[in-house]
Image 1 (cartoon, helix red, strand yellow):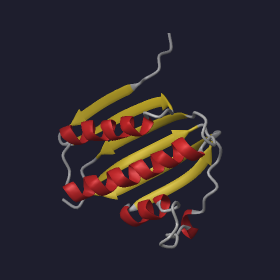
Image 2 (cartoon, rainbow, N blue to C red; image 1 turned 180 degrees about the vertical axis):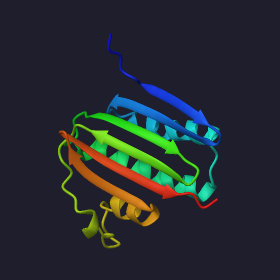
Image 3 (spheres, helix red, strand yellow; image 1 turned 90 degrees about the horizontal axis):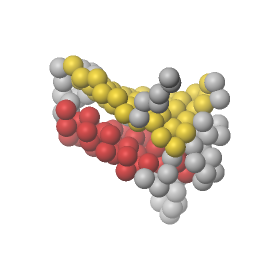
Image 4 (cartoon, rainbow, N blue to C red; image 1 turned 135 degrees about the horizontal axis):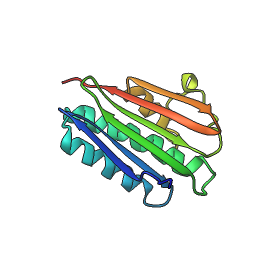
Length: 147
């Protein structure tokens, strides 16, 4: 009988993973924050690394919720990992292809009300990548650990 994994946990010494699978809703961003907080309770990392990774994770998650289906719901999976050398997040979703060239992203002017999320994520992450494969969007976020 097939079963859907809602949340999984794998832990080794000061490293670990968490997985979230859900159809996006108004509560999705809260679930993302809770998942990361739970992982970081078990696998503490430098405060600055944690804060900046959380900001980037929220920015990309927010874009998925808002843009991947033009406001309608999307089946999303998030895998989080704390490794000895990095914090990594991997999103996948079945929404529309993202129309983005990460090499061309820049901060908008000071008066713009939107459009800063990707630029901020690029600046604070060591790696941000996007690809479309198998009818899904795939985002990979990496913040190298400083301590």
